[in-house]
Image (cartoon, rainbow, N blue to C red; front, top):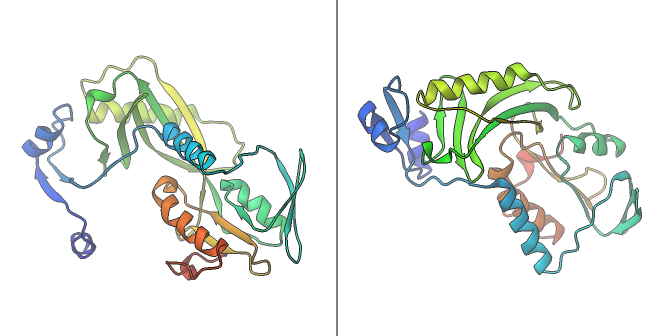
Length: 257
């Protein structure tokens, strides 16, 4: 079924035997007896640089970037007022794209968003990104190793807890063990630990669209751990809605819920 769906959607893939796996990635464990290679796949080598680049491009196009804490959103007939710690800001349209905090902002507007706090962990080992040449996924243990500019990143732990709950060091230790399982010759010295909160929905579909009662308040949240992948189409849909165009993709599956 999965192969058929990939073929129907034009996703190129190749099934590999053990020797073909190691031909692509010699550092992988010999325990891997087969794999799937996606020759057309791409990946981001620096998430920070990506975001900074987008912000720079937006600024070059005349976008004013302001930093403030939103205390309240007050919908009006022709405008929306943001009450912030730096004073009120009046807007024609407001887009709520605040990750897990979108849940609280939605609640203040009478909307109970179906968004849960899915906390993800990753570790980054600086200086050894060349140990593999592309992202590699271990489907059995559901973790991913990705070479980044800053080092080798291992990600694959998720837990549901309150956003401000303390980090669990055992989760990061699991990732170190996963790294050694995938790359038995890996020498791990310094390790940078990270934990972040992802806004996840029960059906894994993001929430994209207008407030049911205030069409000049839009939501763009609930992407879980697919934020970078889902951002371009989300932005395109939101742009259509802001410009009062028919969205290039129906918002019905992603409606506020």
